[in-house]
Length: 192
Image 1 (cartoon, rainbow, N blue to C red):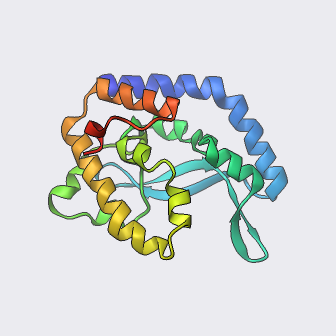
Image 2: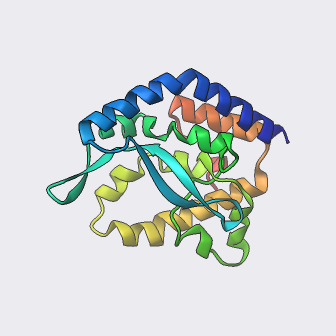
């Protein structure tokens, strides 16, 4: 119950404090891309339920190829593109801390004990997302990023998120939020 109250209260405070900031970036994206500044995508949430995640748009199609925009690079570097997910937290689709919500075809296909992850609401941050905070750069350096994600990254994220699911507490969530704000890796005990 404390987590739900914390999530709702701080999501509302975040929206009130950062709403103008988000709106300015929304307008800049609309002007520079000629498209809606909010990107929506289906993700897998708690109990395997699909929901729509909201982000600031960071990519545009240039000469038929999808590319990260100049503004998008800045938004991604500082995770500003994630701020509209405060709305997802406010309406109860997400929490501040939990496994990052993935596309259909990953968490929804987990088997056996791994499905325990689906008991959790997806989060804005969590131990696996902190460990792989530079995931985009890592995958960009790999010859076959899809294979690497499916065979190395995703199984490790599942392992880390299962550990979080077994040992989570409200105070652990506060620590993980603090690590996120500071941009630091959590202690290895959280990444087992």
